Length: 124
Image (cartoon, rainbow, N blue to C red; front, side, top):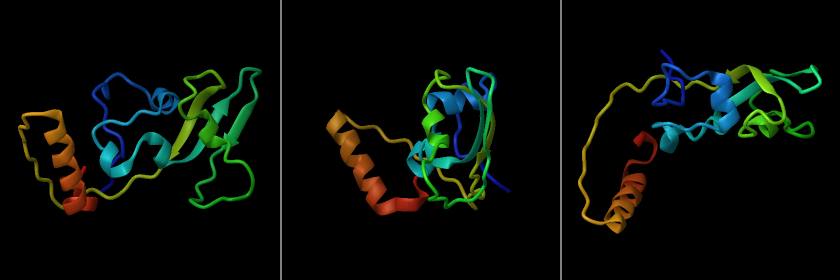
């Protein structure tokens, strides 16, 4: 029913804590953003052993600093990620694939810009 918003080449060997620590993206980056954009809650063990529980699953929380995003992309330097709550959208009803060949990098950029403009939300 639902889709994990990151799809990585190393999905057979990587762990979610490492993905959070490196702010992984994967092939769904253009549609859903990096893992940073999809984290709702996080639990981290700090260097002194303190467990920091930021596992609130409220999408909107403007009560002070957003500490959970401080740990995303920190590569383990601030703490070790032990739990994560992700926003997982529903699976798309259909999938289509296109293979395009462009002669120059400017052509690639133009094609991507056009695809984003025309396809918008369906582009993954």
